[in-house]
Figure 1 (tube, rainbow, N blue to C red):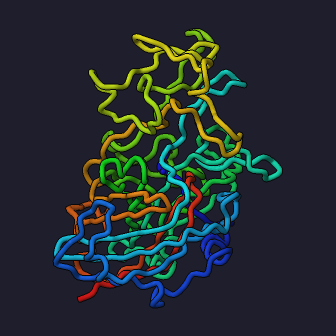
Figure 2: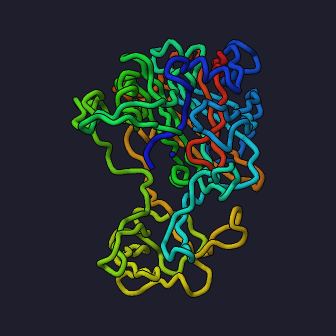
Figure 3: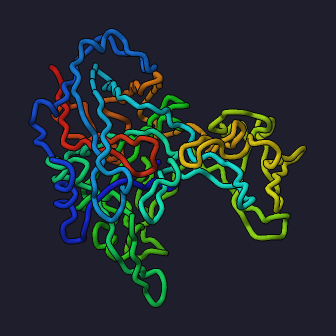
Length: 437
């Protein structure tokens, strides 16, 4: 969703969860019928292709309204109070659970942080992934983030607060902290930051996170989890490193050499999306500036580069130089962004798009291992999203990083939707999944 950050909430160090749940959003009882999703038992499973099979008509839908709260700390500034109404249905069989999520969206946002040439600075830049505002709160540029959604589940019912608070059980907004990684320690404001971590060493939360651009290219949804990560004591000492969000497959490997107060984790295999960015010196000897790493010469209206295209014989070429006038060089050619407007912003300064040949912001590759447990397909209809996804009731997980649904027990869960944004998202807490017997 860039580092795997982002998201979530709470206000002061003394009123964390209370503040988060009372500011903008009433946390309903998970026993309320309107918040209960009944999974229909089927013998004819749907095809996960984003087209609504007739079998879905047998599953009862619930209506939800994920709402962007105001957690404080300016974390969601410019988005507070926005709502993203949606409907959700579910089915299951002997092996899998299936979901169908539908919601209206006037813009298909899949072109994440594209590169454009800034004619004023004569430098290459990436569009912001969230809306930007000036000091007076006036919108200065529309965000070029990605449409996304997520679901959170209580692994083995290990997180007590999740039963009544779901998403808010692990969300924390950071307050000022002391950076002990330097000597002498320095106080940091940490404004506008937040992370997820659970509130006990044995507590874990399953996080299903769908990027409706980079993941669904491969019919996948990213399977992550949240853990203790040292907890509030770590956050109070090191701020942003108190991050309990991790991709499936990595585990605690020992002490963290940089942050001795928090654990260190093993490294995940190279997979998923990566930033299409590198740093080069102007004219080979000047100051270092950011430029695209890979491009496809003469391609138009493309918003990603496949990792396979960067291999020998692939369509992509690597940028090897940049001049003080912005000309990019690669083996066999160059790109001059000053000729025409194909590589520049077009139209209105706030809402205008980018030139037809502006470069993608990320390189895409499939998820593997535990991160690839969820199959997902998303179709943009022109007015909104139709998203189908499935996962085994019980995965092959042995690390306690996935929720086990094979017992068909009632499960609390939360749902979040992002609309063309980076971390700002609408939240629907306190939903309950029941299985039809």
